[in-house]
Length: 170
Image 1 (cartoon, helix red, strand yellow):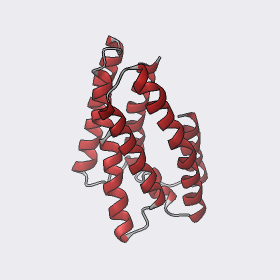
Image 2 (cartoon, helix red, strand yellow):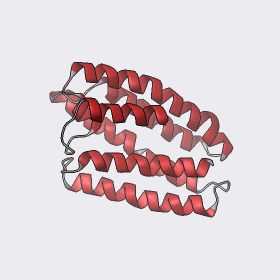
Image 3 (cartoon, one colour):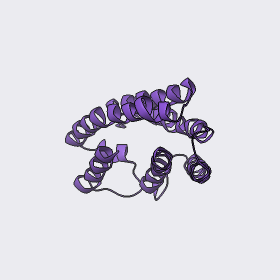
C-alpha cells in the first residue's frame, strides 16, 4: 500500500489538475503519465493481491467469496489502468469497469468484518467505513460521476477500505 500511496501522491504532484478529476482522468491527459500509471499498478496490484489472498484472507479465515471479490476488483482495476479515460468507448469501459472494481470492495469488507477473527474495534471500523464508502458511492452516482471534489471522494473511498483492512490485520 505504501508503493501505491507514494505513486498516487507523485501523480498529483507531477500532473496537477483540479480536484474535480479522478486519478485516472488526471493521468489520461499525458502519455508519460499513462505509462507511469501502468507501471505503478503493474507493481502495486500484485503486491496487494499477495497481501489479501496470501496473508489477510488466510489469517482471518475468509471465504473464497472474499478472495473472488478481491481478485475481481484487482483484475478490473488493472484493466482500467490499461484502458485510460481518453474518450469514446474507452471512457465508457473505464468508468463501468472502475465501478465494478470499487463495488467489489463493499461486500469484501462485509465478509471480512463477519470473520470470527476480527475483534469488535475492527467490526466497528468496518461499519463506519462501509457507511463512508456507500455514502461516497451515493454522492458520485447522484452527481452522475461529476463532483467538485471527485479526487477526494475517490481517495476517501479507498482510504476507508484500506485503513479498515490494515486495522483488522494488526
